[in-house]
Length: 370
Image 1 (spheres, helix red, strand yellow):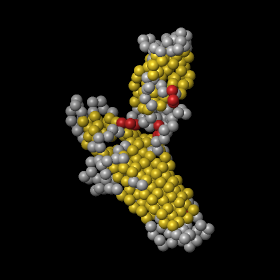
Image 2: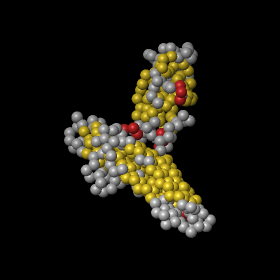
Image 3: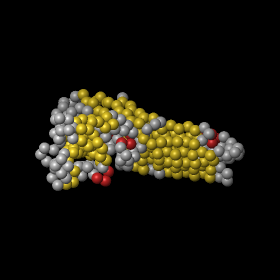
Image 4: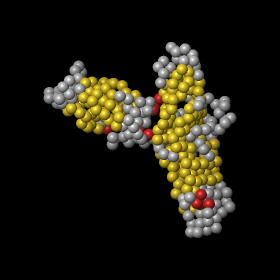
């Protein structure tokens, strides 16, 4: 899957401070602290935007405390939006022969959002049990170079009694929330990292050098598993981007074209495909491209795949009924959550409608998710 190049980095950590969210239905908030003290010269930058209703909210900050020998400087830029959080930053420092130096990044969560989800239905009575799936994807890194480093990063989402967390490594996780029609539930998510160089606190004989680097991204998906129920959010946003989807689109060469079907595309699992209605005993090829179907005409046929990102590979030999099945293992990496693909099958056929040598199936548009 060499064409899978989008990079989504991912991380969300829990808490919004008690008392600060009681009157808040939805909002985004950034905050962080960079400590840069040395040789008795205290210096730190503390930032807190408070709750804002409009996202995305990006808050860059930098602090520099340079002395004759010692130096300490750092940056942090959190971005908060509904369903998406990111923290980026870097810092460097060196200590002195007679003094230690601070270079710390903390005050968590640096990026967070909260939203209120209300379950509605035009067909189900109030109080009908409803299940909601909450998905969390975390990717990226946080590193510290120091004689005694301390690194922690995490993303988490809370909704009523449900808590899902990914910590200290990229990953994905899901949880099921039980609620009911007519109920409102507050959804909270945060992305946190704490980076400390404790070795810098000692005397530098010889001087020690410290650095940190962080680039973390978190993505949250929410979808309703109960037919007939709908989720509405205070923010007006949709969180369904991490749900697996697959549906047929245009393609093929008219009446008699092979039919391509597939199971849901889920991270880290094998997606199974079936071709029916093709020429018996012929080679079938499977193609995919990134993005939606392009539906380009070629003679009597319609090509769903985008040639700019096309990948075509042998799939199977059709049986006596003109059918075959095959599977493709999808990557488990969270960077692929929400990626949209289009797939289509080609079956070799002498005198076929596609340029005289093949049949072409319908297309399938899909979103990789949970």
